[in-house]
Image 1: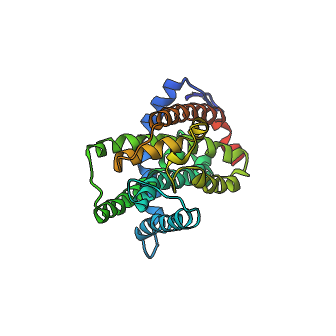
Image 2: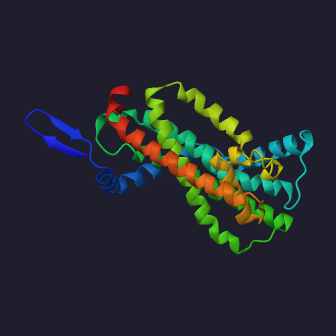
Length: 277
């Protein structure tokens, strides 16, 4: 944004997308500071500290293991069922935690927004930082489970940073869009938790996509988490299915589309944030 000054008025006007990207990069130190602040706040004054990060995925795995294997009677071949579920929980916990924090980032930093100028896009991006802590703690637990079940680690683990990058961009894209919508339409604060909970059962966390009919796989794969979860399972467990590459391509396309829409909408509405908060 360019800043025009006269005696009485300071006018901030929109710049091109390239100029906005340059301004965003110039505030990278603030981005890292806010990310570290959010991480510290997450664990400040908690009795169990990082143990909460470990307890949540373990309990979720046990509940889903009971629901899908004991009640729904779903039988999976290949990797042990607990590993199948926990591997899917890696990207899902990252997504659910990141979107929840990111979507509320603007409202939660209302005082900061009203006091000084900085690219507001920094707030939803930095809010995803604590999700990385959740991911790495959960990955340690997964590694222990793999040792317990004798699951080998192959060269495919080298693709893990690529998978983490993909889930990061999907989470940030949705977080940016929802954070802007959350300011204008406050009903979203009630919709988002339901959306995340509903998405857990609409994504292949407790089961494999092999049970989805080929007739519906394209429609089902419009949920980017389908391709992302199967990518993690391919990397960690070696499990895949005949529609794996189709799911992955659709996830990439949908994620890129959401990112473009989110960036444009956020940039368009950013100037009104101070008035709406």
